[in-house]
Length: 67
Image (cartoon, rainbow, N blue to C red; front, top):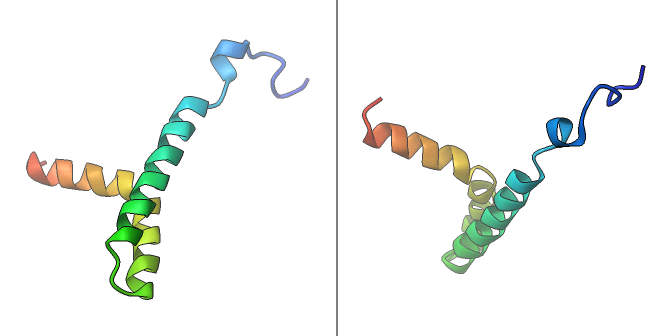
């Protein structure tokens, strides 16, 4: 039996919309961090920050809510 044989299209689709939103967020964050970088290596760190920006937002939100 094939893996997707039991799936309906609307139940087993990926998270394409979430991936698109994450991709746009990554691009926006990368542009922001690169524009504000004063050296090449700060720009590299900015790219790494852009990859994990959702985790940073959740961390700050939980810290703000004191959870």
